[in-house]
Amino acid sequence: MDEADVQLLTSVMTRSLPLAVLTSNENLVRIISFSTQETNWQTPRVGMLLHRAARDVGYRLDCERLFGAEEQPSNPLSWFDMDSQWFQKARDVSENIVEDENALGEANERGWLVPSRDAYWWAPVPRPGKLICIGLNYRDHAAESNMAIPKQPVVFSKFSTAVIAPGEPVVLPAGSAQVDYEAELVVVIGRRAKNVSADRALHHVLGYTCFNDVSARDFQFADGQWQRGKSCDTFAPMGPTIVTADEIADPHNLSIKLILNGQAMQDSNTDQFIFGIPELIAFLSQTITLEPGDVIATGTPPGVGFARKPPVFLKPGDKMEVVIEKVGTLNNPVVAAEKAAAMPR
Image (cartoon, rainbow, N blue to C red; front, side, top):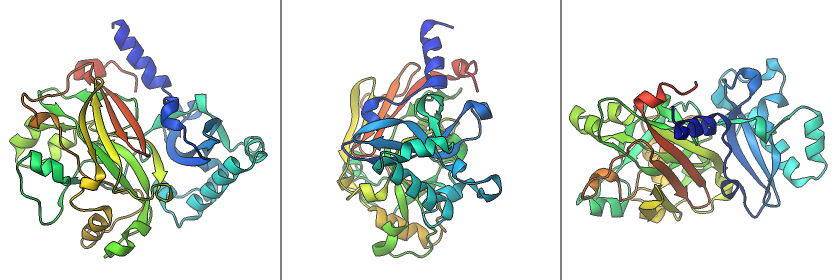
């Protein structure tokens, strides 16, 4: 194992997000999932990232510690239900901590907080109930591809086992030589939605996060359908946090970029959406019940690797960044399958 490999393994086990990702100009709360050494770094649980006056306070609110063992939800996705007692109490406590100077110390005394250095980050929704994706949803991407504007959303899915955290490596599967990137804005559902009208759809949105719809194009195009090529292990990086919907005044006016090894490969704006988020939720909920903890990846802008001349595909050692205005930055390295086998689990 060479020095680069050692550095990669160390970063995965002890990673922390860069300050630029975490800071803002306000007292903010971000939803995360994390684990600690007491569970051997396994069993992710929901927490809140706390900022006061644009500075990380150095602790994570452990939402599970707000409740006794007998009070925990039976379904972990209930933490993402905006109407649940668990989410509401966690939100109230976290907002009090960032607004009240004395509340941080009191919360620490009660055992509700975990020092930042002791928290291993997972994707904010480690195992979504449903991971729904939308194809060809940017006008500039359709123009680049010389494809007609679709009359209704193009819907597919990825298996939730493909989800990985910020900083974790995307593994190039054996047998594929055409692995591609796709920067996307993800919508996290926070209320059950069935037959929801477009004008009520945003009422069901908990928040937003960054996503990379990594795709094995040779698998995707050879199979005649997309499931295998889109769902390889590690092909759904997500994070770093859920930014709640109340902090994003207009999700249809956000810059979105994919940066590969320092070069911007995708650079667009969600104002290029063909189908906006309300329309997507209304369309999907006609036939699919959306539940808290479901996520919707809203499509990718132009600049994907397979459409370039010559094509650009991912290779070991690459570093990807998905950068979405007001939402954050999602970083993931790329490794070969044989090196991934040597990494700690």
